[in-house]
Image (cartoon, rainbow, N blue to C red; front, side, top):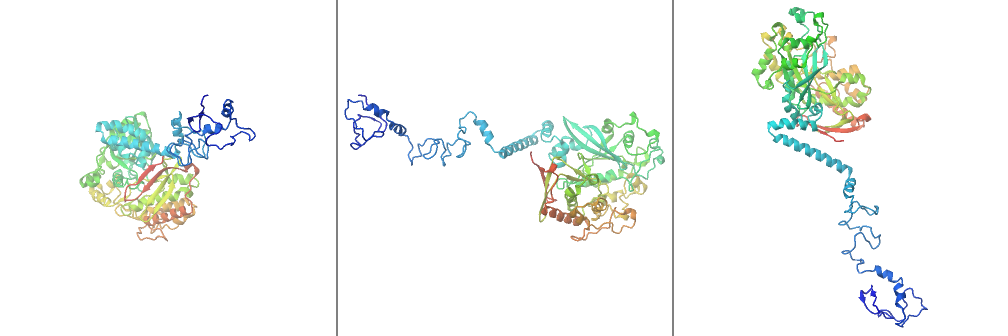
Length: 613
């Protein structure tokens, strides 16, 4: 007879009526007690035993069945107490990626066909965003490093590609200091008009004309501003006896327009702080008209009452070639450190222009500065935007008086009014988080605006203002010649305590006094600060009210605000109070954080970092 395989023992052996390990008369499973065990070997007793279902458990009891204490050969995903495919608690080596004890049964295996897609979907969103940001930063740094290592010839090819990719809006990048050095290097410091593509008049008034100019080189675009002063009001063009000026009348402000040479010198001085204080415009270049007809076309752009002879015609329309060929840049970048150059530049402003004795060269100079994209003045926004003072004003004033207090006695603006403050909003849909590191605390707030202080023609600058006065106090630059040249520096406006030769640390409180008297904001914290401002002291003429005050360097903080230091301390308290009361909320359309700016004052350069969407 064929010897069946005994799965329990793993041996071929004869089947006897009684297994040697079984007691006699012991019934087998599923055999009734009343059914005797067949002992006759000729009786086919084997067949029922083969079909007895008791064998089934034995079939599953293979020698590879895991024991209680056996883990070495335990099949992947098995457990004595759990489902067959349930992962073990301590098993990580062979655990399928993405599975969990409570997860679905059909998790993809490591060798599954959809493994790559599964890896992507299982990664954290924040990890992917962080990785993408790091990749972009590393790519940006790598390309920037390649530019630094490249030769000058290769740089001209690499820089425009780099700027187009990482700085597509040059106005924004220049304003926040992003790759500013590369853009300046690419356009040769904006000191030449070689790359001038077109111009646009963005402002024209009593003080002169302001042009927006477009630079274009190798498919990359940048912008600048050219400011040209109008002749001083004491000049009556009829007395000049020149056919061009016959019948021309130009309305002028009380003090006359600012002299471009002096404003250029102040701009050069403030350029030294451009990496430390983000609230001043960069000054690029001083230019000079060398052609009378080109200058004539520029004057026609100014507000005036022209005679019939002065009406615009195709022949006197200003074009780009006029500016490129006849408005020449002057090399005076190091003039502040060169007394010979300084004297030469200043004295040139008092010389006759175009052979006209009473028309001095001081008004034939132009000033090129940094361009601010879509700016708005404090006057415009306070007059037209309801609730602006409640949300934004205190944080704007903090920025202004922080910079002024840092340069206390080194620089005084002397003309700080609501039209000489520009607000630039780099992100229409978000805000900048400002972090100011002060000596004893950190002030942190949100604002969508970057503040820029403009127009430095009447400012005081450390030792240089006295140097300037010394060099223009000559026969050639005194009296009417000084007036005709735009030099009024020797005329300290005593009635309003504006002296170019000494710092009036109280004069720049004019902006706070103007906001208090004209706009009268209702916000409680702002009102509390403005009520402490001491201004218009010892002003005798009522017509001069609001134009100045006597200097008071003695602190009145916290009870009164006597100077810019007191103003900054009071605004710091006001900002802190607004933060403590959770007042630093901004309209919903600005509630996305787009950038972070850390400002350290004169200790180290400020840092501006964008937050990627």
